[in-house]
Length: 343
Image 1 (cartoon, rainbow, N blue to C red):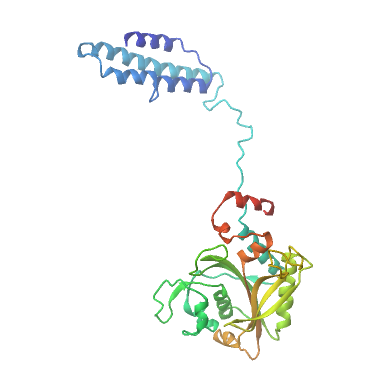
Image 2 (image 1 turned 30 degrees about the horizontal axis):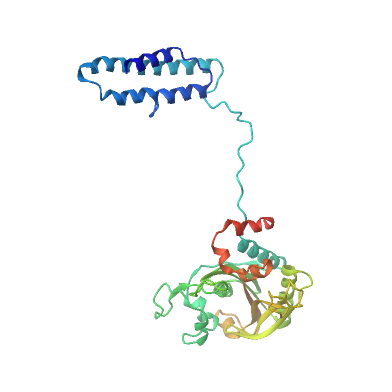
């Protein structure tokens, strides 16, 4: 130990360093937690008792001299114009970090909203945790109505209560709030996340996103609705897109229809995406049922309107030919990077 102490004393006395980084490296090497002088203090515990005083004095002297030498070198470096910061060029560009990409569901939702904004629709949003009145009863779902079974609901409170709290199963509840509070005429789209107690598969998920629309005014007709949906489809899928309407059923609209668009892959000729039919289903729609208008305090004899709703994931699947709905929720960077060009 004596020889190592003497060698380090000689090294400390002869230290000649210029830059702040060199000085800091020497400090860490000698006095850091794993430094050479620190290691000698650890060994000092094993020295014989009769020699502890001698070696203790030498070690303390070494440590004191090393600390003083480091401070002397720092002062000399600062006096020579050296900064205590690292010697790298601070004006040089920093390291670049890869940017994340937009999620396809967000891209698609914003595209849908942008199209309807261009048509004069406002955007309305509402709570995801709703009550039974806004989600069901105001939309013509009486308590024992069989259509409630079409939507498996996550209840937050006991569903036997008069007006239980639940996770909304559609964004139609936002339309109800608009009818209750907004002045007529009403022209809104309602984007948002919805929840249904369904098994997760390639074609279904317990969480998904919707954009629903509502237009209420005097003398609104089914033809107005068809024209609005046709304009949307051509903006979304291309100017040659055609639509067809098939009779359907929804408790809150009458008459109701499902809307298909001509397949944008095969141009209506038939392919595996459209299963040879040449058509792809995109949304449901219909004229607002008079009972729904009356429930929100709107005179159904004077006003009429139409409503429509679409699943954002469904539109995105058709637009980009995504075959598995679960891809949207798994945060696989390989999948998400495919949409960088859409940012």
